[in-house]
Length: 221
Image (cartoon, rainbow, N blue to C red; front, top):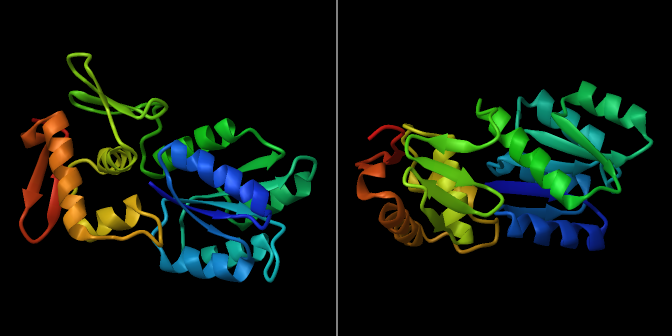
């Protein structure tokens, strides 16, 4: 899954980016409101972490502009812990969740996972389809036999995106946009390699190739 982290504190953003990366997210980072608004409009993020106290354009204005333009990407806002009015204003502007500073990164990760699941109508605490469960904390797939299949970072992000969109044709372009960061090499041929790896782990029949459409992660075999 791909996130946009909007935070002007360089030390904090570097720490959070590293932690989110280890948790299986592809993370783009921007430090001002103007660039944040542009990136949020132009790139297909699965969620955005938005600080409100930004240079050039306040985070609340950025959020309002997104919602005015019908950009409904899930947004978690960061506020000072005692700034209750910022939380209220954020929710009125269209925020989906908030977290007060200072915060524990593990809580941020848990909230983001829950936010993304809700945005895909998957409110349960664990992603699963017939015969496959995804352990997001350990980043592994658990088969019906109970066998645990450890995943690389890219395999994990790809499988999570598949499991959030079961039985839907997903093009290589769409998969690439949600698995890689903005400045990574998005070679579509590499995506085929990761699809092959997931098939070896989960079974060839689990991921169907649809000519002219892409791939379908089958919920039933």
